Image 1 (cartoon, one colour):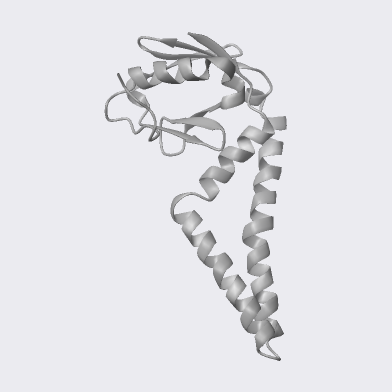
Image 2 (cartoon, helix red, strand yellow):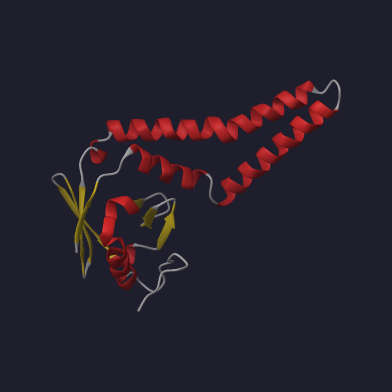
Length: 169
């Protein structure tokens, strides 16, 4: 089974947002935004507490505007400047793993190297390490999406963590 994917700045941004706001960092962000909201209310309720209100607004802006904007700018720069994202990457699913062709470079991702598969924000993320993953946007997989992902689910080791709805047969 063969397919091609060209990642865009939008895909990289969605992937970055997923990592920035999931797990412990996501919980920390929610707590900081809630503290910021409480500071705004406390500052406006207490007659002279504008310091608290301004600090609260600053905290809220940092986590809801500045961080996503920074991630978007970084993704846009990465998509424009990295030759890896300029061209399509070809993937060929075979019995021994996923064969990857990027320009003149080739490689194989053995099935046992994939330890987690996640579906988030319209993309499948195949983790091969804590800091490395392959991104398959739903739109790029097109009508083959279910067929491709079912093939992958059947070939990864039983220890691989799959999305909740995924089934091995």
